[in-house]
Image (cartoon, rainbow, N blue to C red; front, side, top):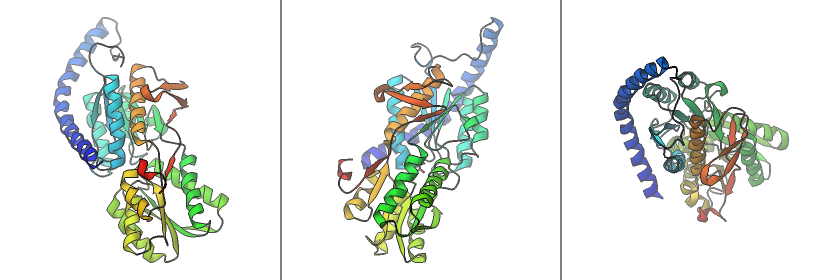
Length: 358
Ligand code: RAM
């Protein structure tokens, strides 16, 4: 697993360098394209026509893939699926991301891709509102825009590939917290950030479920960890001393769950304070087997990347358009398109009983 992760990080770095080299090459290509476009316009042909992804000959469509950050194993796994889809479809996938979540850096990357004239951008947005101006600009230039994992504002993208419904995720976390505490006592929430649309939506659903079903539970604190394990650990350490009656910590960012587990272990509160959240089996397996963490909930992250690239390809090729009800995604089969949302599936729970298999 570690080797896979390092290999993926290494190839991600190469992709970053590649992006810069491509930049110069593409300025040249763009000038050429512009001249060709003018000539074609003179001949009465549309200048903005793009090669369909399945047209066979000519230039490969370029899909630009932008996770929230590059160091996060969650997105390394998404990229693995994205690479697989790109290879199967014969696309060129370029990758870039801030080292750590950074909305301004995401905007810069998008601006670079707009200048390059990529065919599609697939982005997981650290700041849903903040990224929308840059994405709208990309759309206005004819670039197809897909969001995945964490959405932008709806008018700034063509489609959003959602891992599971907001309610499905929020309720799964809240119901598991209630099951483990017997529906009583104080608990705290660790979130990735307060700007990402997925974090905002899931927290809202958790709070709605709490209000509706669990009158004897109290959410005493919500702390952002900037999608960093160390910060999650220090936030959890502070929570454990500020709230001595705390029964459970739930994280809705994958870096929160192992961070909180380490804090609980070091505070000598294993079992006394339960630990759950949205997380990767690899990052949590040993804590789950040790009994520090009770439940980890997630979806198939590789499939999320795979489906996202299929959606981007469909948007470029014209096989995925507004109003469509279905999307074919290679080996994963057919997915339902609900309005402008494409849903991956249902969240899955990993526990001591099954985590060794994943
Ligand atoms: C983090 C990110 C991502 C979220 C997962 C569960 O890695 O914040 O957006 O979906 O956790």
